[in-house]
Each structure stands twice: as C-alpha cells, then as structure tokens.
Length: 322
Image (cartoon, rainbow, N blue to C red; front, top):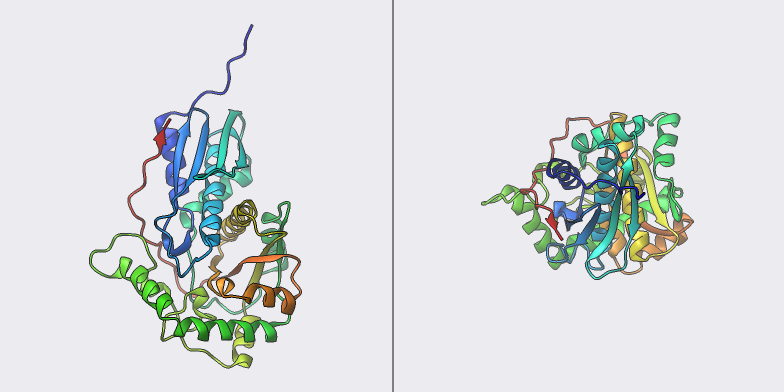
C-alpha cells in the first residue's frame, strides 16, 4: 500500500504566497525575483535586469532582497498549514527552492510575523529618541540568529561616524550614483509613476545619513554630531561568516525576520547598505568596529515619530508553472 505525497497548493493558495513575497523589502523597491511553481516545490528565481547597478554593483543587495522574499514565502506556506523546507541553490536563475510538505499547524509566532508582512515599512526619518527595552532588543537579535549569521550592536561610534561621513561625501560626488538614484526616485514621483522605486517623501536629512540613500543635497554633519546621532539610534550590523551568494541570502532571510519581529512589536526600521559597496569600506568597518564577520547590512529601528506610508508596489508578477 502506497502513501500519497503532499498535496499541491490550490491557485488561491499560490496567490497567497505571491502576495506575501510581493511585500518583501528589496533594493530600491525593485523586487528582483519571480516564483516558479513546480507541484509542491516553489523556486525563487533571480531577476537581474531590474537592479540599480550603481547602488548594488556586486548584486549583494539583490541576494539579500531575495532572502527577504524567501522568509515571506516560508511564513506564508506555514500559515497555510503546511510544512516548509527552504534550500539554497547554486543555479543560474533559481536561488532557492521552498519544498511544501505535509499539513502542519502554524505556531503563534508564525502568525505574528506573517501578519506583520503587510505592516512593515521602511522608515528613513528620525526615530523617537530613547532606547528600545532590553527584552525587545534581545527578541530582535534572537529572531535573526542563524548558522553563520551574526547580529552585532556596533561599538566605537566615533570611528563608525567617521566612516559613514566619508562614505556620504563620496556618494554625494558620485555623478553616476546620483543620476541612477534620481531615476529610481522619479519612478514613484514623476510621470508616469510605475510603482517601483523610492518615494521621495520617505527621505529625511535628519536621518544618519539619510538612512542609506544619499541624494546630492544630503547634509554631512561633523563627525562628533554624527556620532551623537548614531548613539541615539538602535543599530544592528548583520554579518556573515563569508560572502557567498548563499550567505547573502541567509543574511536577507535573517534581516527580514528581525524586521518583521520589530514590526510585530510596533517598531519601525530601515536598512543601510550603500556605503558597504564602496571599495575598502567593509574591510575598514570590520577592523574599526571589530566585527565577527563580513558586514552585509546595517539595520536601524525604533519608534517612528510620524506614521510611515507603505511604498507603492508594481502589479504583482504572476507565478508561472512548470
């Protein structure tokens, strides 16, 4: 007597997966992925044609974006009452496969994080000053724990400020970066609005340093002032043991779990990556801050001073089937 394998998902359930994946954060809101459904396996395919190359010259942000999408995909499968196993792949297009298993009750934590997907925002303004409670901070760090991924509170903020100030000045003068950034902001604010890109009103000169995006008019405070701003923030540096595509995916998955945990606890967050792409910056950051691995992203979080509107979204890319 043979036992039937796990049942394939219905079209309605596949729509649930697609909507959850579509709400994942991505570099410049570019959503560089697409789903391929193969029975009880769902491949996450990498789309290279939509990524801003001056913002993300090595594709690391693209991989972390795909990692965030994988976390949302896994949560969506679990709240549908199915087991889910995610495996990274080294294929040309498919970066990972989610295998959908047999029925399994979702945990309360799965539901909490899944419900946070639609409420997660990128808050690039200042936060309310004040420390996040220690228990909440510990919960965020625990949410990102994974093999080979480390979340670190940065020390030596005076040196950190010097490095970020230098990176900001470099990016302000980089004409290629400025042209590209202007186009991605124009996708949202200019005619016609396409739904990808970064809303201009999400940028604030008070955030250090504009929370990762650096238009040409970004003010650069003195190192002491910037160090003071950093000291008032809640920051985590996401590090990995190495710098392979699989480790970048793992960093993105961990970062999204942290971000959704923050959202579930009524906090807001945003991610800084652009300085990490400058030549030599990551090595200096490791040396100056005594980091335990390769820095992939800086996550800032706290209570938002003003409500954060959701970023616009392009129409969903329909999953396709094999």
